[in-house]
Image 1 (tube, rainbow, N blue to C red):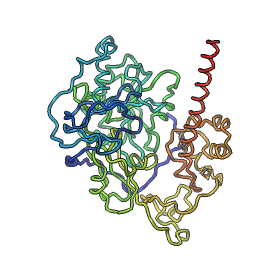
Image 2 (cartoon, rainbow, N blue to C red):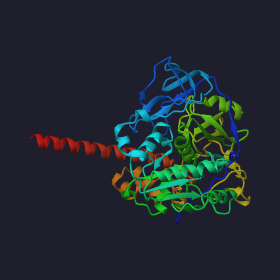
Image 3 (cartoon, rainbow, N blue to C red):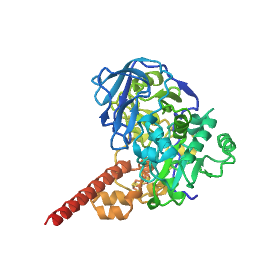
Image 4 (cartoon, protein in one colour):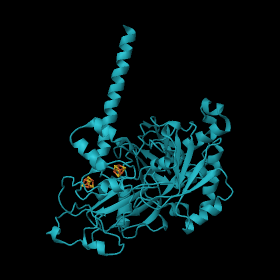
Length: 468
Ligand code: SF4
Ligand code: SF4
């Protein structure tokens, strides 16, 4: 496998693999929006009692993916905007959630494999699946050309694969077997860390003898765990059909759904970053109040919290009260409120820089204590080429930036903006502090919107021509 670019960011606050279980909260705040999903059909009423595993809402644009109640309790729909709140909770009952009698006819026609796929969807395991190229939720009834299973998580400070799989390798291999039973001859590529790590040896030991699983070792460099990059490196073509991609936690959810017919209601997330008192992993359920987690692990008053990793995480606004169903980790950095006094005169002994222009280049590897501070003003591009060096998508971010600045959309498309995986490395290394990643995300949205408008215009014209 050939990779290009990539860069490991060494920052303080890497979570240890220890997993701590948080106490049951009084209320859960389930956001109706997550990274990919918008639960736009509420299936419960205000004041209704629900059991753990009951469907609270569905995302009608994503194969009616359900939002499941993580605990039994009373539904409150008016307490917090864009959230379903669960109050008066009581411990989860032992009820096994088997929805087979409600199977849609199409699933029954597909036989055992159809029933299994429907179970994955209705028991919350399907939400862990992505299409490698689009990042979207694949159709559970589709036939993939291949499956990529990753045990890696390389973006600081997302939940680590070894923390997810600790003491659960048996469930993981059983989940892989279940997944294989949904396929015909398509390969499962199992992405593993460097062979020399003890974790890699354990995984290899467990899947010894699975001819259908192809072990792929990947260097531990961000973002080589990205499904899009992996699919390209494996030579899988975008046009040859969907590529199901799933991380270790998804395989554990598959095992739970298909071995014991139980929904996946808790997950392991990380809490990391320079201001976290003890960076660690947490076993929590969706809707867990974010403030309770911050109160326990963060002591600084001025912070910025990201839902996700240091490079791609979204800022958690005040309106978001609980963990979403897709949260993989919280990253917390300090947000200074005052300007650094004559900061430019500091020699940079404690500052990391890709350019190695600070005094810190003389130090051996040390984790920096990153803040949200810009450390200087925005500058024009100085054509240093750092962004191109680190870009794993083999495109030229500086050129894209220049084309976008001049509104040259055709040239932007020719420079293959579509290949950008939004990893954020270009923004991170840019000495001019240009927000390349956000620029590219906005530009992609704009181009897609314009293309959609053209498609709609053409469709309208065709209808008009036919009627004439
Ligand atoms: S965000 Fe896009 S352009 Fe920037 S380094 Fe990543 S893939 Fe390359
Ligand atoms: S890293 Fe920044 S300054 Fe350097 S070439 Fe890229 S956009 Fe320009």
